[in-house]
Length: 223
Ligand code: ATP
Ligand code: MG
Image 1: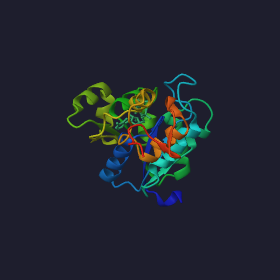
Image 2: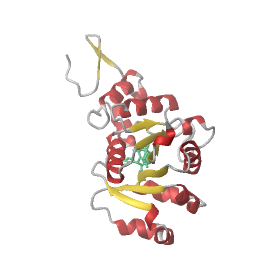
Image 3: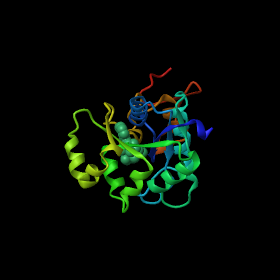
């Protein structure tokens, strides 16, 4: 199965929860570079969040499965969830290049801000050897900012650092978690199945509302 994938997009994230910003970005990058597949890789222990400051991996994984189900080019990987300890992008890329082999080109998809954190890693050359980076930016984003912040690294590896404009950049998991906590609607920010999963499992302080035996989401008209 792995051998047939020549160009593989890799979208790593906490996905707490996954939202349309992630999905639109993955599809935009897939279309732009004609990628065979995009692999969503939910993190095990995120590097920048305190232990317990994020939702259990089994829920984040399930939401990612539900959100990607209808796109035949999207798949979900458990490599980061199953590796013990903190998730580092370098380990994800090593594991995937071993799994898929040398004939598969990897494209790591990330937000423009996250790319700066990742490439601030002690050996960015190693990361750039393993994959091409595709940074999603807001339309009209000042590209010279990224070039400036990456400096010499950008000039040396221009062919391995790409930028794609994505209109849905303002959606964030932080905002969705807050909306659920405050009882505000999340409809059209996440796929409906993900919204139901959140309410059914009481994630982010969601309280279930059952009307006539049916689970209601915030913002749903009562039956
Ligand atoms: P949080 O608010 O909890 O940090 P998030 O919305 O940033 O969550 P992550 O799971 O942290 O989501 O992000 C995974 C990847 O998706 C990162 O590379 C991030 O830059 C990118 N990303 C996040 N939100 C968007 C968006 N709206 N559009 C495009 N890419 C996004
Ligand atoms: Mg984030």
